[in-house]
Length: 185
Image 1 (cartoon, rainbow, N blue to C red):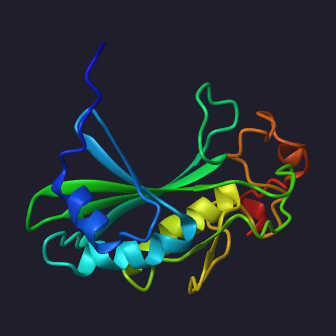
Image 2: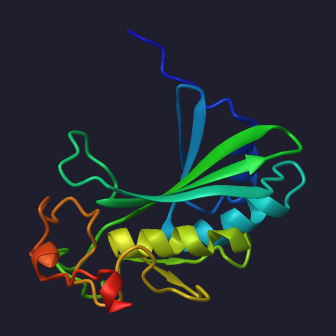
């Protein structure tokens, strides 16, 4: 029987000691460590990871969305938001993941109260555009975001195209989209 992996990244122990009341999980895969937090604990854990000198994750590299619809293994929620953190003083990288499960059908643009997270733009201002992209593509909204509007599709786009239940050929957007050429300018 194989030995279960150990979570030996030092940040796991630091966060566990600080947030003993929170439901935290951790994974490591191919040398990459991921802390899984509950949506309600995300903001305070992220601020701690930046401000605590033992962690010092001073740079937010990426914010990405994932849709686990049809994933072969069970997941705690259909959607995940992953934050890629870097600590330049320690030359270290650490991931934080939050799972969200929709409470409404995901085939449109209706706001789902279960698909909200607190924005981290007050901690890392560079999160503004990546959070907008996650909102635009997946429909996950960020509370207290300074400018949460679509960034890759137009304002009235009828869905969130990176959701796995969105049709590969779209819902007719290409056929109805007005082509603009040089004479229209």
